[in-house]
Amino acid sequence: MKKHLIALCLLQALSVGTLSTSFAASNLNPQNVSTAPVIAQDKLHSLSWLPVMPPVTQDIELNASSVTINQGNISGAVAAIALPADQGSLEITLTSSIKDKRAYVPNVLVLDEQLQPAAYFPGSYFPYAKPGIASGNRLEGTLKLTPVLGQKQIYLLIYTTTDDLARTSTMPSPAKLYAEGANNAIPDVPDLVVRHSPTGSLTIKAKTEQNSGNIMIGKLFGAADPKPVVIGSTGAAVNTTAAPAPASAPALAPAPAPAPMRAAPAPKTEPLLNETESYFNNAIKQAIKEGEIDKALRLMNEAERLGSSTARATFISSVKGKG
Image (cartoon, rainbow, N blue to C red; front, side, top):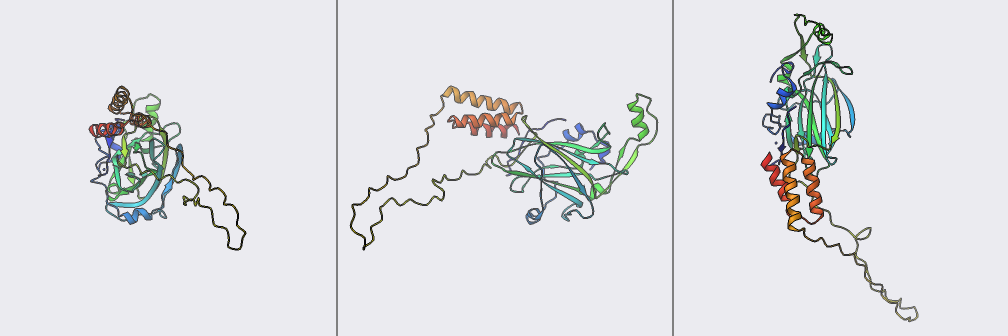
């Protein structure tokens, strides 16, 4: 599958059976969310998001009792998935099983931590896949996502549309599949018609990966502001003045006042040498040029730890130039 490197700064209808995975991926721009349905924020906040923690294989059954959303072109049952955004790049394989010549055509709207649209994968991104040793006929596609630093979670809203339901897909007949597996001549028999359904069986396989992902999810400037450091359990001011003795008590020599509590000074970070600064900046640029966003992030973090003042700006400008 062709990889796309897209930086999302958030200021982000065809028969599925006729598309190959590489064709679907190379002719779609997930960053373009203009054709995605507009869903009210209150509706998104009201959904029960299912947490999925990689590595995991999660089965989801969409049926008549599943949650539905009646906005835009959405029709039928939906699945709401929450994924961790602080574990590096995510590789998510979404499978929709074909059963009794019926299939749920998934569309995926990716939302950042603020539930803002960040990427959109329509039904054409999930083409027909032939059965294997451990899998049957299915629609399937793989999403590679790289959450921007500073987020805790991102979200996947999986749904189908009225346009999908009005169409059909095709899959090879069992006779063709058998002949292909046996290296026999392919019989001239018609393919089977797969009807699209508002319900179905989904499987999500999620894992983290160290290599770069296709799509960056979230604002490049989205890192949360650091919280102030509080000395002590409550942060309350410490009274270091000795309390006066009660009037009825005999006069005593005042006890020496305790020394005021002071936080240990933070270690000073010396600025990097120009040669070291240049080394990190060049390495960050090269990593992004090669599509290795995770490597670039690690280099940026290490450079800043050592005192770099330009690594973050280099990372951001390089990603914007690549997007």
